[in-house]
Image 1 (cartoon, rainbow, N blue to C red):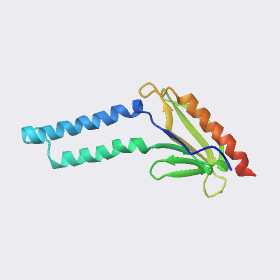
Image 2: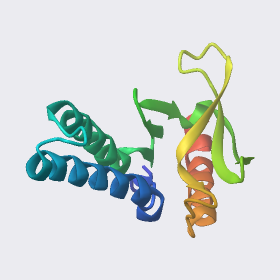
Image 3: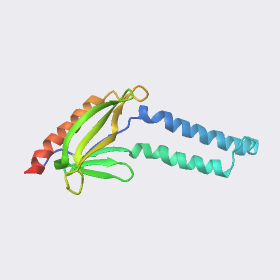
Length: 154
């Protein structure tokens, strides 16, 4: 039995901040228009409802990420995906438009041997959303994989 706990890798506040603040600003402007200007600039129930959908998306940025468990890598997305450690063949860092992302190479979940690549939403780093702990998070991810892939194959 492994002594390693479940580890959660999320986007940082710095990476989520621009979107969350833009959504809050949108909501403030819509409600100010509805309450103070009687909707002269387009503020109405539909734009407020769109703002509620944006608020849900902003809240979901806290949930998006990656978890490391004894049984595998859990990708928190829609739909969530679990990649068993024994299916993972490589964890690499790629440059994509000036940002660094983590890509997991693995077999499909049905065990058919089909090679797949899954880009993780966290950890990531780039000029607009820097994560100072990115290299440490990648190191933890690779260490967790190394600790569990041998035991899974045994």
